[in-house]
Length: 166
Image (cartoon, rainbow, N blue to C red; front, side, top):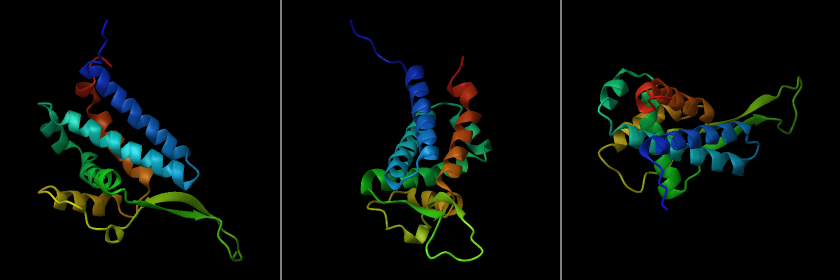
């Protein structure tokens, strides 16, 4: 007997993988768990995007969505994480030494690196300039979780056609 996962099940599992990675990213309290969850989240986001772009409704929905604009930057980040194994983020905030008075503690956050701190990509395509612009505008210097939640909003905006019967 052979059992295979169908396309709808694959799509749903990909979304579950992405959401699970976001939950782990949100809960991560150290560099390594943050890196693992972030890399997994960008992988799943681009996997979902690659699946959706084959659909007939994709271009119209993409053009109408303000949330989609983060996706080329997420793809740019995924390419670094996958092909060049580049650290894309920095932890900021928390308690620092020496202390100053009055004592204030910035919340700990993980931010995407500024664009100019990234190395050049190993390989460029015709899409690279748009991906770089999206990274600059929507990711660079911003909290990682915030930008990936924007990607999640893009996926939610198409779930009526991407996951029919859900």
